[in-house]
Length: 170
Image (cartoon, rainbow, N blue to C red; front, side, top):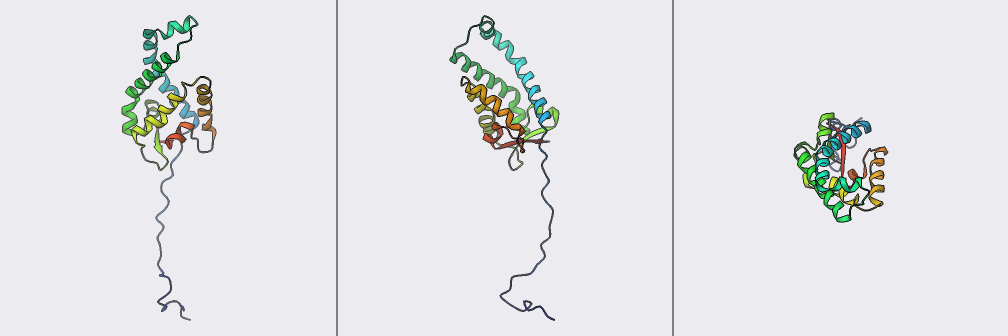
């Protein structure tokens, strides 16, 4: 018996569509590895910032029990961000990795798996966090909630959600 649609000019075209497979799955970086990477990056940053903190008088104020004013804290935050960019900026721009992430085989990508735009990465992923943490009480609460978001299924912290990024195995 002949297919009734074989000579029908109004039938849908019949062709075999080859399945070339799914795109490679991107493996999310583990929570523990992200923690260790953040600790490495913090140690590097603090190694450079502690001498600056002593030179600025911040440490003597803290040791004497004085609370630095908001302007002083904002200035130290700007200095801290500048030092962070000077140390990590090249690596973030080149490969989406901080030194800690590079050592542990992780990288930051956008939600499509591409290297994120450097300015967007600095401003949204890091700059927003630095700025929000200046707000008394709320800043500390934000810092805690930000890192606790890593326990979500997609392992994205608030700073990842803001910047549209995720951390994956390199």
